[in-house]
Amino acid sequence: MSLSVYLTMQVDTGGPEPRTFELFDGYVTNNLKDMAKAANIYLHIWRPAEKNVTTAADLIEPFTRGLHQLKSQPKYFKEFNPPNGWGTYEGFVKFVEDYLTSCRENPKALVSANG
Image 1 (cartoon, one colour):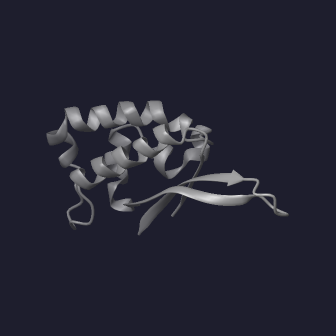
Image 2 (cartoon, rainbow, N blue to C red):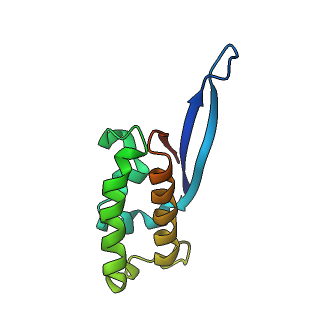
Image 3 (cartoon, rainbow, N blue to C red):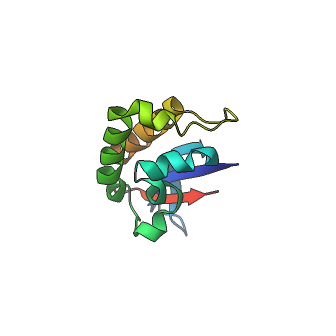
């Protein structure tokens, strides 16, 4: 199983309803939950509403800290690689980097997670 995360923006294009544009979509395997928990970003990724995260701006600081932790202790975090091989430290770091970059580029975007 995997988690899908999205950054979206609603825009009034003049029609009867605002139009939703997807600015970022990312996917991460649920096998990496323990790694995310160890980096203190699990709830921000998997359950953003529980952290009162609504916009991308809300994720910038926790993702910056979490990414720093991940990169400063690779040996520790690689211990959380799932034994079945579905998900890796390297893949998770790239996912967080990409998500953080999009958050910085689109701080007013709405955050959602499904999975």
